[in-house]
Image (cartoon, rainbow, N blue to C red):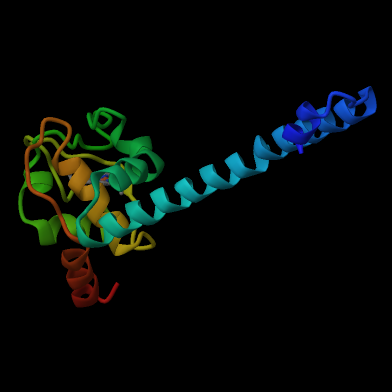
Length: 170
Ligand code: HEC
């Protein structure tokens, strides 16, 4: 159509205006913002699915960091140093780096009465049970704790958490 208009030397202004409007409408349709919104929604969903997928098979420390900041940080502090006399540190402790079954039990059941002294010091605070967290979330948070705060121990898997949970009835 444009070609025919160009070839037609007798074309008048109203023809040109029509072509211009058609081009503008087309350009607006092509750069529609809806398209971009949909694209970013899709990649967000894909990202969430991927995170969940990884968390199911390994204790994903990225999931764990989120859980830590949501549930543990109030007592054990951002740097895992705890609060003197009240909440123990998570830095290089025998509980964090030792027997995984014991560690999972602490998170599932909570604790009070100074059952978990660190470096000979007992702590009088109360750790509430966290059995409302999923196997993936507990595996993630323990993997995160065991690989941060100067700790260098291996991951905890959701399967290990599931086993302790079913054996403990919680
Ligand atoms: C309301 C405060 C509170 C919250 C929340 C809390 N804890 Fe604790 N935690 C404590 C206290 C107090 C103890 C010591 C209990 C004892 O000695 O009987 C403890 C003990 C521990 C221990 C064993 C001792 C050590 O420091 O190595 C670990 C491991 C632990 N908590 C991890 C966690 C994790 C992981 C979370 C989050 C899922 C969490 N805690 C949430 C207060 C808390």
